[in-house]
Length: 373
Length: 224
Image (tube, rainbow over all chains, first blue to last red; front, side, top):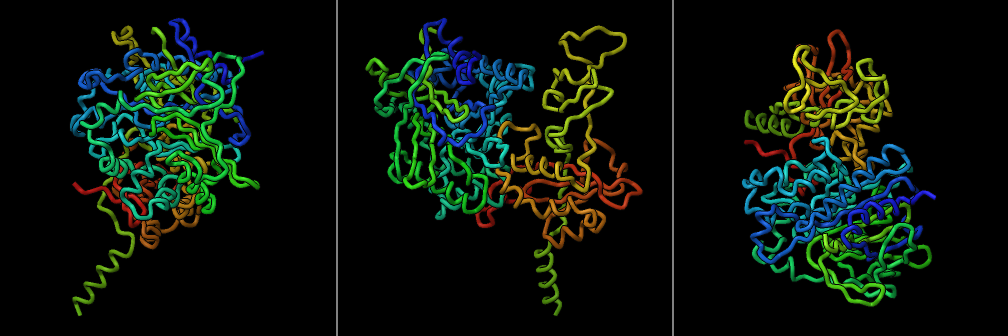
């Protein structure tokens, strides 16, 4: 029996991890028609905040560690997935759609002004840049990721010129009604800091209104980010010190291998958006509702995928009496730490290293545990 | 009296779409929308006459297997492995008036923010349909395309310019070229010699600018 799309992705990841004693663990999962995805063709790979730095700059942060930078694990995993994408393009059964959810190259920590952008050398984090978006220009394996703008992706209102950033993206829906909306997740922080009618502005600029998606707004969001980001000097300890306690759940984080059954693992199941402990859940919920009233593409969204919080979790809202449901997939990060329990009860505190995948109505967040690589 | 006339003149100048003294430079194929990306192509120049799409690799140093390499007749392969040239298409622009299929691909391009490569994900199509409705009406209308487009631009308050520096052809190849701005895109319309109507469209992504919150639209780029 052929492997499912999820299992082929798991296989590709484990081919990198297992030979060196590493493993994949399931942090979160919802497998339910509530996701509202009618298609089984696309598999969505969601890469959360990476906050990568050039090696020279990372050294300046002393004891701070950028997990994948040390081990090259993420680059290796993504290169394997780029090969899978190419194989799928050949047989046409599936399509691997990759979204990097923002805060990719941390210009905020890397540089002190936009004039220094040319100092980022071509080979600084070259493997990651190639496999995500640059490789297509260089004849190298490439995921052709959609790169979403995060608050650390600009300096002096300017982003890395080589990246075609977007503020948001929807899945391509044959029925014209996207189920998935992806954005970095900082929009409310930025807009609320600057605008009295921030909810309406979010609907205008993110879910959509009369202006095009993101042609104009890189500079605007960069400017707002500068007002809200913590100063660089205050962020050193945040890299190693911040620890996110992932929600306690009945089932611990099981090891993930292709073909093995997996449980649902949801941080919150709520009946009212106001009940969520996630800072942004109710705001996204409300904005989808407003988009529905305005007849915009965001009105059909069932799944909102974000990064930004560095705290991986899935929140499901199912109001009673057929009320509008919504799933928030907060994909985590590759910076800061997480604390969770394995299925044998062992408590783990380790660097965040999350990847999320959605295929059909099955959404998952994995923790990558590199082992001895 | 003269002051009143001057004030009225200024008011009129502000109130209608004004000719911009902008020069629109058409950049590389990466920076312009000049064909319906969803339609497959076929050409005797391409190996095996298989339908193909033009994607980014066609315009990279390593080229694309869809398109032939060109080598010098006498010399051997260069030290860096690059060909002397690749044969790649220069598109004529999208045919006008827009067909429904061409309109849909154009809106997809506009909704996606102006990236020429067809993205795996989409922008907000519903918002784009509304945002660009006036310009789409022009592009779909045989009557408007035969009419005074500058007059239309003024009446509908769109910035316009005749100064389009085309990367593909000499300006003299065309009887008339007008670009109309909407939503931070320039829509360049081309009229071939001895034709009554504009019959080709190329869209150029205007420089990204700050947001004008009050107007809820991009602010014009600052003049240098």
